[in-house]
Length: 236
Picture 1 (cartoon, rainbow, N blue to C red):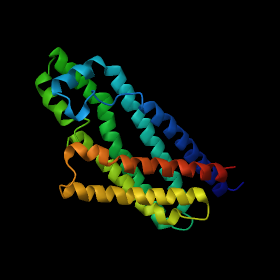
Picture 2 (tube, rainbow, N blue to C red):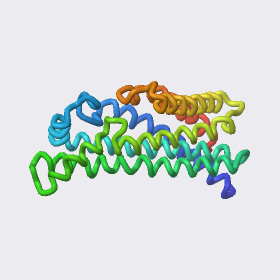
Picture 3 (spheres, helix red, strand yellow):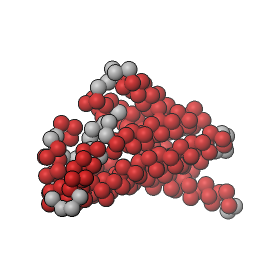
């Protein structure tokens, strides 16, 4: 077995296991809360009290999100590799976009497991630095779409949409799985850009932003799961 064939098998194996991990972490995320009940509409005092009493649960939920994000990156890298033989420049740019998305997502998610729990504890106990902790926690609200925290998250999703638009056409091929994935990625990329335009035009208000991206997220998941059949077939 030559080096290229061995590498191809490994990358397809990476893609397949990334999809498996994504499915598992997505199911787990259904049972783990990412914020206080009420999210966007919750009072700041209620959020502080909830974060303080549910510290471990909150950290576990966001640690699970980190694993999910890395699994998406793994699947995307495998997709970029797949189009590399016919569209090498597009594949390189797409892989670079994935790397940037990892950094964009890693910043807020690390803040969630490191900074936010300490801020809540500091405010609750009135420890040294509580005067600074309170406004910082407001800035890092995980549910308000215009907070510093969620701005990084949506930057990551925008990078996902750029990746989707880059690979959608090159990915389209004879097999049903790649066709489904290609169409799903293309539609998700277009949908995100249209939603972004709707926000800029004032047609979508802040409270509706999160719900507006549900379709985009579902299309991405469908596209990634469809590629699992190709990854499995390609690896030996």
